[in-house]
Image (cartoon, rainbow, N blue to C red):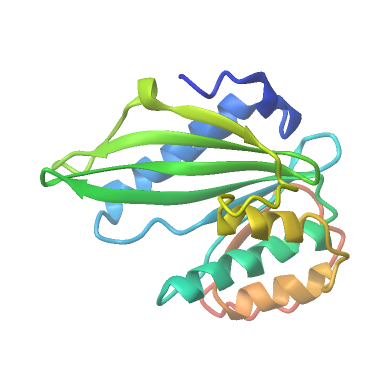
Amino acid sequence: MSGVNNPILEKFCLEPKDEVSNIKKSYEEHFSLNSSKTYKPRLVLFDLFRIKKFAISSKDYVDEKDFFVSISEMLYAYSAFYASSCILVLDSNNKINEHTTGSLIVYFVSDDMCAILSLYYRQNQDNTIEWIDQLNTCEQIDIKSKDSSVNKVVEMLFVHTHINPPFTKNQLLSYYSVKKYKFKSFRDLKTSYINYDIEG
């Protein structure tokens, strides 16, 4: 599993290989059931001890602007939940010779560093995913860089890992339920919120 073995990833979570394995399984299950639908962005937050505490997946979005708005809204949880690191998962694919190939872009982020893991795959005609592990890459970048080549997502990650919490946890959770974000707590959040998700 080229790239996954980079020791820098252990600075963000205790078991990066397990997290990557979970990400792959999630994508495989998504594609087997919804091959025509976009894989929505996912965010996982970790505490000071690099233990997973909260996860959220994006609401539906209609265009590129709404896509980035959704990512930003999810990232407000970083400060509200006093996270120390996070993993953001985005899908990037394109058509080559009538086969769909691409990569899951996995951002491992804290307030002082960022590593970008690219997990390459091929979508088969039988709705299965073939992982091309030999192409995987892991790049450490300076999250504070002012270089214009740094992409928009990294800029957003820098902002959201350095702001003071503009919202409380219960405000965000209530908002997430209104907007149909899907979220899950792995630890007691010690907060309450209004659940507007009437579908459960």
